[in-house]
Image (cartoon, rainbow, N blue to C red; front, side, top):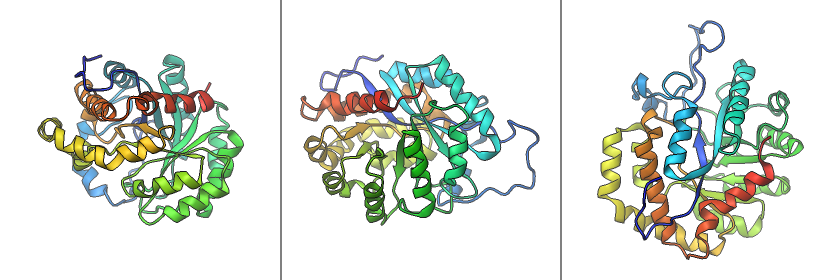
Length: 327
């Protein structure tokens, strides 16, 4: 792990938002040459990513590299979203099982399941997936507003309430990304499923989080957008541009993040967690990039009241991992 400046938080980190690449489309059988992928709001941007920079597990990226990245930046765990689709349920879940066996303490696995152009799938299908290896998954998600799917139902829609019924039966968490204007829908879901733990993130929803947390004690929030002006570069841009822009704008980005989040976090330090939301592009998994993201996260956490720093850095996530952690 790097030596970080003295002003930074120096302790352990848990990344509460890490995307694991999906398996290649041709992992089972021959590819469907007639398949036309569904188009989301950012699909054109994803199309600009060169083939060698598109994360695919076992080809352009592997679990060992991701594990090495986490360890080098000082992340002791990661809430990891593993894509699982109906067409490749068994091989996808087998991957998760092998990862947990190889790295039992590093990855907290979430099942990220979707189908048919929707950012989720029916509860009955989710239930079948979860029964392939009971106890493997600690959570369901990330689901919700998706840049790659054209249909993004609100969190209190029938398809999601069906999912949440299954989540409750399996005693796992939900990681949800609310869409614009869906804050009231989210609150209805939180009320209806008050015994389900929800993890939330998103630049749209954060201004509403204090009120939401005041009214609902089953919701947590990941602050991964603390370098908001550069998020699109991390997702679709060039590595060197991202790293240079981070360094050049470091103080301004940090000051903006402090104004945006410091008072919210210090008011409810047991409900916020650090995360990175990596996974759109291969270079985002590079160790040097991970160390930069961790350093910025540590710099931000270092601006908080020392009494709350370890909670948002890792203890809140650790509590959830221990409560729901897969076998």
